[in-house]
Image 1: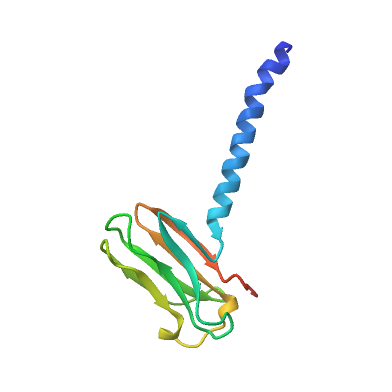
Image 2: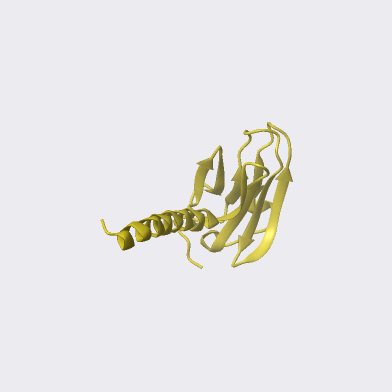
Length: 127
């Protein structure tokens, strides 16, 4: 390998690592409707994906942190919940705030010290 190639190799490796890291960050910024990062959390559908019943949820676990789950429809805040303690589950139910279009809704969730605020959409997203 010539000297120019040896100098370029570390830059190439760094570029690849940064690209994969950026992909992981983007994946967390707008996540699937529900996943686990130490605790299960996200957008939980009701009985049907068209019944207007859905939840923003952050399950209990991973220490006694503050958990937030807030609901939005068409980008507008409709309500939410904040809980604390090792056994408290954050569970904001859409019907506690009115009747909203499920496919146009999101939940913004976080768990202090475990994962930062990010958005989950319905898997039948329509907005």
